[in-house]
Length: 110
View: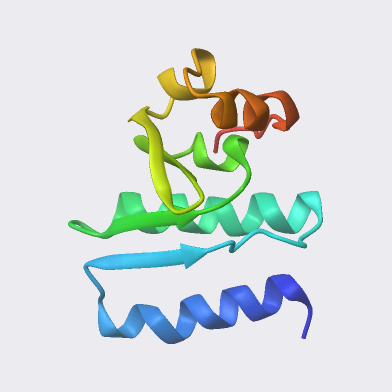
C-alpha cells in the first residue's frame, strides 16, 4: 500500500468506533502534495460531518496546523506558544515558532 492508502486505512479502522477525539500524529508526513491534500480534505470533512468530533493534528508543518482552530507550538516537549491558528503563524513570538514559520509551505484550505 502507498503512504496515502495506509493513512486512509488507519482512518477507516478508527472511525467505526465513533471516537470523540481523533489523534493524527504526522498523518501527512512523506506524502506527495496531491495525497496530502486529499488526506487533509478527508479529515476536515469528517470534522464537519461528525458532531462532537475533535481532531488533534500533530505536525511539524505550520501550514497543515493552520487548518486547525488553535495551535500549540512545542519545543523540547514544552509548550512555548499557543493561540488561534491564524494568529500564531502571522505573529510568532517565540524563536522556535519564528524558525518554523520561516520554513512553512502554504496549504490550500478545503
